[in-house]
Amino acid sequence: MSSSTPDLLDLIREVLAGGDVYLVGGAVRDELLGRELVDLDIVCSDPKKAARLFAKKSGGAPFPLSERHGAWRVTFVGGECVDFTPLRGTLAEDLMLRDFTVNAIAEPLAGGEVVDPFDGRRDLSERRLRVVSERVFDDDPLRLLRAVRFEQELGLRLDQKSEELVRSHAELASAPAGERILAELEKLAWPGYERLDELGLLTPLGGSLALVGRVDRKLVDSPRLRLTTIFGEGLRRLPISGELDRYVGTLLRAQPPADDSPRQIHRFRRATEPWAIDALAFLGAGKYADAVRLARETEPDEPLLHGDQLGLAPNPLIGELLDLIAEERAAGTISTREEALELVRSRLEEL
Image (cartoon, rainbow, N blue to C red; front, side, top):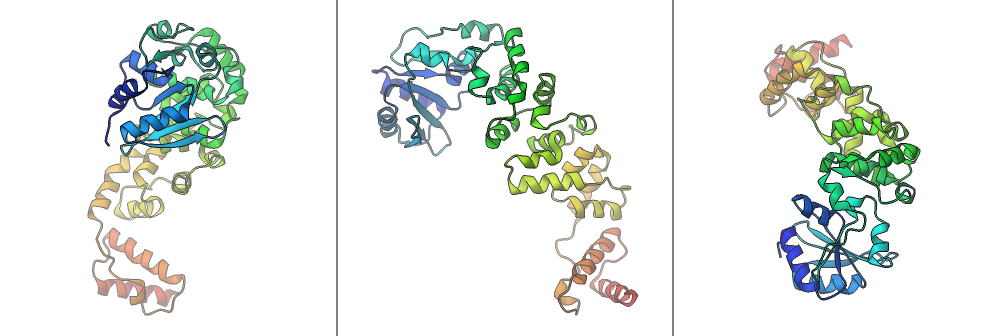
């Protein structure tokens, strides 16, 4: 079954409306804001039963999300998912355990008035982000980063008391698991990092805005470029992927081309591809971007020579000779197989 999230919400209301079941959190908030619904969170007395019933009707795949907490999830081939979690005490007590008032709103699937004990709807209308209680950051320090993300994504602003609470808990910013921290950081744009710094959250995370000013954001703007710029080598303290690790190393080692000559552009690309344009953005050297793009577009499909055509026993020198051939070809000093062989002979005579 292929369903959109709004379709799933309609089906949830149809299938589960007869019980003590509530739509909570971000889905209610986003519905009130007229935003696109992505994932849905349902609280009920029996998540396992509700998840299996909904999965049977919708064609989704149910599985336990947390044995400890009794949560279940139903997923769909299109990537949508619906989470079912147990009601923690009464509905009011459950909502009191949430982070911000705009996320502490519940909609009864059986119909009736929206439950909004902390006046979250008013905060939404006044574009305010306000904590539910003074314990929210002690209970889960990741909420410090989520506060900045919510400001960015929802166009809200922390009220004075909540902002003071964030600042007073800033030292906890690095306490959550690295995977959770990284997931939040990847969602932040440049202003989000500036806000982290303003609130005192960036330093505990090991980040700095020192290099932000030189980055050519018009050339490239991506989560991994932002992460590399803000955290540098320190990013490797988080559980990043192997590809992101290579990306970070490539950009941190990169030096701008001496000029836009084919030889210099070739050397730069050899050191930085497949991320040459990103490296230029990181170095603030966007003036060379056209030269790099031209080199990419005109790069020959095949090398003039392969290693087994050099007539040498396997050794590290073969790679150096192939690099030399590629550079001289890019520089325009050779263009044929014969010229490449002659270049190799000349270099071997020099050794």
